[in-house]
Image 1 (cartoon, rainbow, N blue to C red):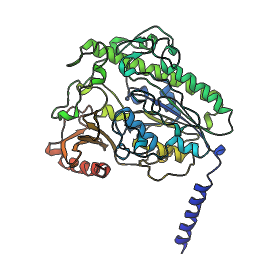
Image 2: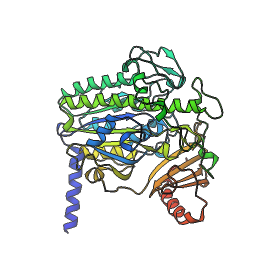
Image 3: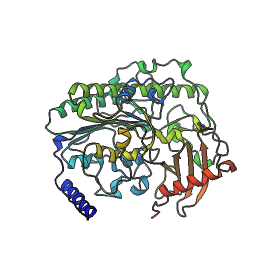
Image 4: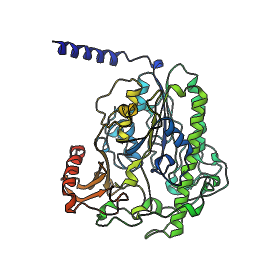
Length: 485
């Protein structure tokens, strides 16, 4: 009888919460900082050279998730997954073109959920993926039209001294080192707009959800010269694992056409050592450039007086290869592409500055921010709240993280082969499945205790038979239910 009564009370409480949500002015703000194509080259994540003082100081005031993974290593599917709380297979979004509302016209995005409950929501820069012909955001997510800083950089364009929002003025290659001010490029302009938005938000009688999306360190690596000068070329090393994994399947690789499309890059074959070092140097410069812009926004938040009532979440949409495994750019399921920076700082959180090894996914951001801000929970979210890990860095919320990518990487219609990869218990296990039958055509297994750089595919080694079986079952539980219609 007591249990039945308690269940009735819980049901009534849920109905009241949904029908009459808590007053928005009692909830915390959200500042979401998004970077593009950034792998784990950050000081707080142990990189020996990368200079990221502002990302590092955010980690010192929040929780650094050292084992965070994206859902797919390319911009559109990853960002759609984060902002809707659904996996790419659920959304049917696996490429750069398809919008998630083609599958779910009435889906409630993360900022839209906040907007529906009284928050002022604003997007600046690249939050959703930008289409190949025009910006492709999501107007329903925002209280005001999104501020775009958009350029067709995949066609080699770089910005040098152009007006904000104007067509770029100069065409260049994959790198550029000019002695120009920060605001010669998009990200400093984005930071300036974010600072202005923070000033305006602090004057409103409602909490805000401000999403700020930076372009860097996405190609081209065109940071101002002073960020290149932070690094001596002698300390920029070539990749430690430049060859494809031994016994690895060909389907796990790709032709890194994104980089090859830039001026001066070979259309086939490997890069020279000098090209490799120049690109890796440029990537570091781009990271330090965007780190500086992140610092400007964090400083503005502190000056606004809203910092003590603001949840900050910083994340990258996916990782990036810089010559490792013979690859450049993204679109693989290897650790370099799947693992991403993720930091969450919440007001009055327990043990700030302590990192966690908990396995988490970017898809967990939606339920986490909803949980932290006291909004009603939504049905259909496929991630879990990370609030337990924010309370205790030793806590665990899931056993594995799932990342996927199709082959061919770019296609029209349905994929032919889908690679599903899980990180769990120090192993990366991948199945390349025929899309129609769901049967694996290739399998990979990497033991990070023995092989942290994923140089040897151990899937067929007898010593790993038990581990392979366990990981296959785990992957099946996460990816086995995907629809092939």
